[in-house]
Amino acid sequence: MPHITIYHLEGRRSERIVWLMEELGQPYDLKFVRGSLGASLMEIRKVNPEMPVAPTVIYGDDVLVESGAIIDILLNRHAPGKLIPDLNSKDYAWHQIWMHYAEGSLAARALADYRVWQIQPPTQKGPLVDAGGVIKFAESYLAKHPYFGGAEFSAADIMMQFPLEYAFRINIVDQTKYPFINAWNAKVTARPAYQRMVRVSKPDGMLGPPEPLPDSARAPS
Image (spheres, rainbow, N blue to C red):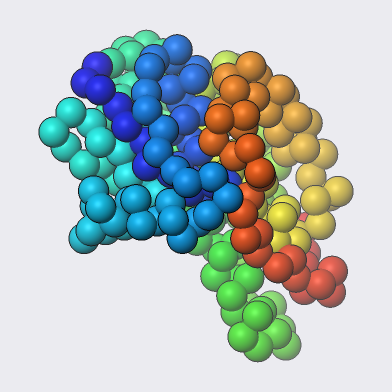
């Protein structure tokens, strides 16, 4: 594996790459300014001025963005057979779905509903799947499977943990209504690699956490 440097913002998606590297037991450098999102972002701008986002990963001579893509690159090239179900297994298709669902449906819908409510509280439920629906879909899957990768912990769990925790943090749904997600989250966040990630990448938690919505704004579960 080429030398990996992770440019990071505390309590943001870049923690996924730190978690992955801890699960793999691979060395990496972690760059951020503790306690300052602004100063950390300035460090990212130095190496990635056109797209200053976290994660920005220096991978040999390449500058990589998008946490899901970075995870795929590192696993497919350097850790074959790890944290991914076998391609011919029943679990593989759903592992791939959750890898993309984390940002494509879950994070996008939860954040859209959150921002809409902040601008102008809606007076009626929209015709499409809302934040409650996308989270309930995950809850239903976990009612039948121990992990988002199916039978075993996988990269899909790394991808899904951040947006689910974030959705509960912004109070877009009532967290107590999702017992299977809560049980899964307790299990994956107890992993030694996750705990190591927390210690090194977010010693002060999430800096500048979003203001949670009032309980009256929660999407129906």
